[in-house]
Image (cartoon, rainbow, N blue to C red; front, side):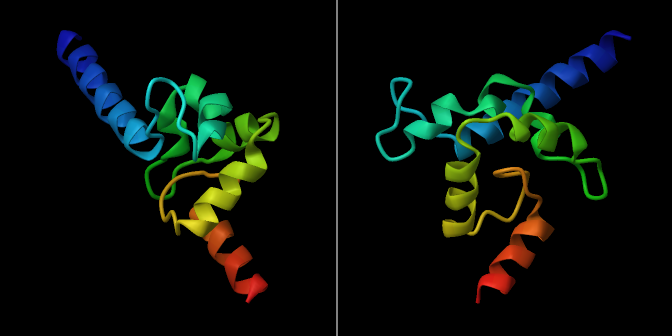
Length: 103
């Protein structure tokens, strides 16, 4: 059991590191991306926003539904060609479709 708990802790740290890479905040606020500090995903477990291939996106999308910065998040993901994770309530596949439809 201790090994499983240790593995989960290491996995959580890696997941949080990935979120901090994606959400770089300086002194709590980044002038260009201040919206990220208000994002609900920044206050929850980041693992649900980066599911394994074929994993469920339902939990992350449910959080996005009530997020006040959903539009800014999606705009950022589209402008920066984010290829992984749930951004602005959309999966990678849904963002690709949206971009194709806009062209």
